[in-house]
Length: 110
Length: 116
Image (cartoon, rainbow over all chains, first blue to last red; front, side, top):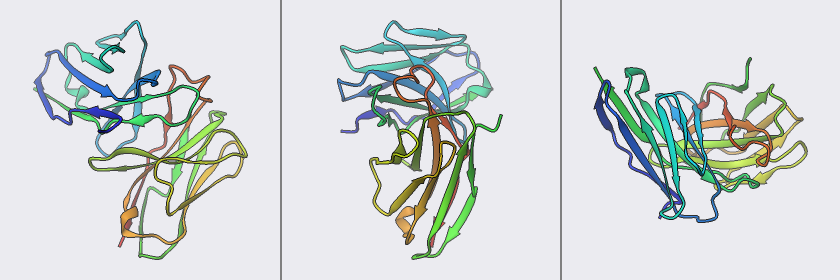
C-alpha cells in the first residue's frame, strides 16, 4: 500500500460545479499535509496547507480527518482555469521526507 | 523574484554518460531537495540537504550524488546515466521543516532528462 494514495481521475466536471477529492495516508505519525497544484509539464505549486481544524481559501476548502486518515480538497464554483492535477502531500514536520501522492487530474469543461 | 532556478531544462544523454543538474534558490531557504517524477509514481525524493554542509539520502538515491555547494546551490550528479533515470527532475527548497509549517516547498521548473 502506498503511503499516500489518491484517485488518479480524471474528474470531468462542468464549469460552476463543486468537486471534492480525497487522499488517504497510511502513516498515523504524519502531522503536516498540503495540497499542491500541478499544471501539465509544469512544476508543482503550493495550493494550500491543511490544518487540523480545516481551512478555507476562497473557493477552496481543505479538511483533515485523523480518525480515518484522510484529507480532502473541495473546490466550489469550478473555473476552466482550475483544470490541473492536484497532489496530496503528507509527512512529519521536523523530518524532511514528505510523501507525495500521484495526483488527481481535474478537467473543468465549458 | 527568481525563486528556484534549474538548469538545463532539457537534456538527452547516452547510456553511461555523466551530467550535473544545477539548482539555485534566492529565498535564503535552509533546506533543498531533489525529486524525480515518473508517470504513475508521483514525486520521489532522491536526496535532500537540511542545511548548508549536510546532505542525506531520500527514497531513491541509487545512481545519484549531490553537492550542497553553498546555501543557495544544490547540484545533482548522474555519474553513469541509465535508461531507468529517464525522468523529470525537480529541485525544491524550503525553510527548515519546523519553520515551514504552512509554507511548503518552492519548486524549480524542472529538467526533462532522457537517457537513450
